[in-house]
Amino acid sequence: MKLLEDRIRRDSEVLPGNVLKINSFLNHQVDPELMMAVGQEFARLFQDSGVTKVLTCEASGIAPGVMAAYELHVPMVFARKKKPATLNDAVYWADVYSYTKKVTNQICVEQKFLHEDDNLLIIDDFLANGEAVKGMINIAKQAQANIAGIGIVVAKNFQGGSAWIKEHGYRLEALANIASLRDNQVHFMGEE
Ligand code: 5GP
Image 1 (cartoon, rainbow, N blue to C red):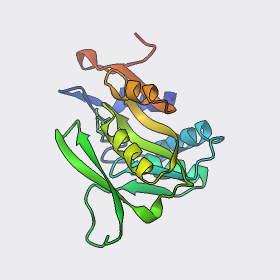
Image 2 (tube, rainbow, N blue to C red):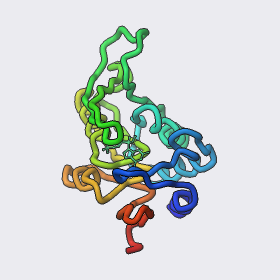
Image 3 (cartoon, protein in one colour):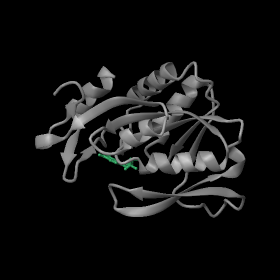
């Protein structure tokens, strides 16, 4: 998606450890117009997939997730990283190892929001090693829901997540595909 790639070129910073900082439009400050364009692109890609719900993870999946859900006219559910005190009902849990924070967290979704007749579009901001996506797939499986596909805003294709998703037969659509962050520069796929 050219609009997104141009914005990444203009407004990102490469941090040590192959981490891309894009907190002026997605990870801290959010650009709603860009997120709407992202949501429209996910909706265009998955318009014929019969998606019934978008599943994402707090916090940074929410902006692209809600825009995709808005465009597809379906609800969005975000997995929580801590069980809220108000949440007494049955929940699905999954472990997620955080690449950026180097810790294992648990994510949870209240069982009443996912059903076996759901066809889920899983959305996240970044794809690195695929741990967050694996956690959401785990939760979808516990609910016996189908997975229509996985929509990622920025995929770092030189890490293992993209290969894992494709090897496991899921449809993956990433709107910006990064081949490397060599020399502290963003190199998109097809550029090298
Ligand atoms: P994975 O679980 O695929 O290893 O990593 C995905 C999660 O880690 C994303 O939800 C995102 O929050 C975080 N993450 C991974 N790589 C990056 C990165 O380069 N930049 C930022 N901002 N977040 C990242």
